[in-house]
Image 1 (cartoon, rainbow, N blue to C red):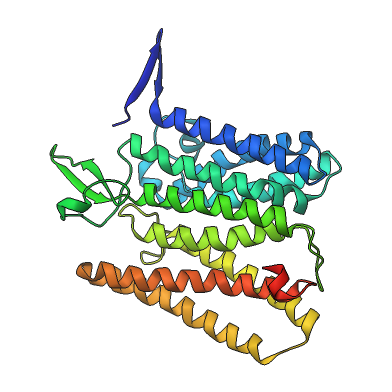
Image 2 (image 1 turned 90 degrees about the vertical axis):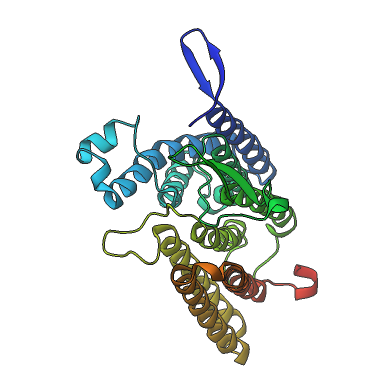
Length: 333
């Protein structure tokens, strides 16, 4: 059920739509301010936001159609009738990259600088999208919270079952909303302090969005595991689409900064140590996901372990980035 906020004539406005709109506008204004601060042009950011929305909606729908073809009456029905069905948010990442490249080319700008300015706003926009789910009964945490003192936000949200009963489940989207707000603040700080730091290898531009993606994907992997309605590819019923996208993205970031780090510093022993630690953490998230799916009463210990492993994955990418900076680590941090 999607609660109605207000009627204006024959038009109905829902709380979830209002919250998403407010979040997108706040993200746009923040990104415009950072774009101007970074020496970019306003028109580039406006083009980027417009094209991202234009590309994201059909791409996210097509990916959902591919994974849930039984819910649609064919491909054309899926991409023309948006009154039903859903979306897989992971497809917004390639849509944003394509939009940034086109916007930069059309306005003779820099794709990396544009994405850097948009990164904190992206965290804010997704945060409000997650928050909106509290207002359409879609906070679908798989963990049932039975302890009375915990049956309220931020840990639990009331959900109405098909039989009309009310049960309290882990507030997946609200917790993710809080995490993304924190990430937005951290990325604002990172952008203001780090965007002009010289690099021993690679460019100064593009690092804000890369570090944002590392921590964002780590949070996506973790929070998607807590949902009971995750989307899976037809050939895979174990690791969700969001989790696959997240792992691939973090792995690509590791490869990027590993290459730059070796180029800047030569091969060091700690390179090998961090690569082994990364693989161990990746195995850890896979193992904890397996245990969660097989043992429903191991939630607490498994999610503590998964949280630590996800943080290690993002931290290692961050550490390789720091090794590429052209200043001492104590100054860079």
